[in-house]
Image 1 (cartoon, rainbow, N blue to C red):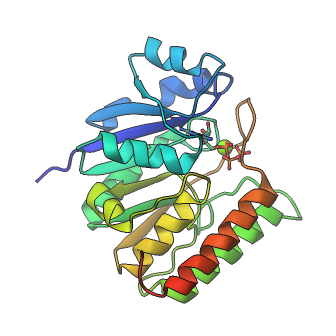
Image 2 (image 1 turned 120 degrees about the horizontal axis):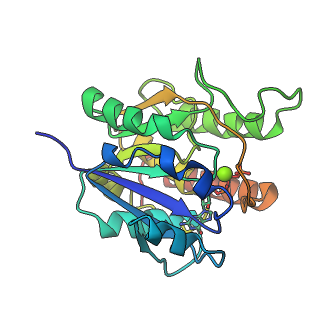
Length: 233
Ligand SMILES: Nc1nc2c(ncn2[C@@H]2O[C@H](COP(=O)(O)OP(=O)(O)OP(=O)(O)O)[C@@H](O)[C@H]2O)c(=O)[nH]1
Ligand SMILES: [Mg+2]
């Protein structure tokens, strides 16, 4: 049976980047397209609406909160989360959907770390963000993954089965959402896959993912998950 697909655009003040790539987003790859917006004040919401995209608000700021709003709002079988700030290649949207469905996966991540992939820092000698990401990814795999190694547990660009995500019960508001989702899916023994992707620079606007607070949040949740053992709640 064909799975119903939802494409979820995640935005917070992306009016500089969004118009530069909107026309390259393959909206027809999904049965339903909507955005979850974190309270943009720069015209992002109005821009999306002018393009016919339904925009949902969120009760609190944060990507984790936005993931949950999307999950609660849809009856689709599969969700693809996509952030239109320029980092993520929109051409990979149909590929993550297709891999999930054809491979029978619960989660397919667009990986910036696998063979054939490209990370924003790959041209640099010091790849601090990449190495820290790889360290968190190594720990998650070592502690909980019984399937094939997942090379990028953190990237937000991913397709996931809605019922599997509901089982994870990830109640976090911030940037740790993707890491927590990956860990809990490993704990539950779900099927995780990936496709290689190419990470591009932002097309304008500003990142709100600040390294130190994000790193502290990740560490706190990693310890919390370790204390839970194989349980998810
Ligand atoms: N819905 C929603 N989206 C958000 C929120 N915060 C950030 N985003 C979006 O999530 C995506 C990623 O956020 P960024 O701040 O770019 O984080 P990042 O990609 O790790 O940082 P860069 O690599 O510098 O771009 C962007 O599309 C943001 O607009 C939020 O509170 N709600
Ligand atoms: Mg970004």
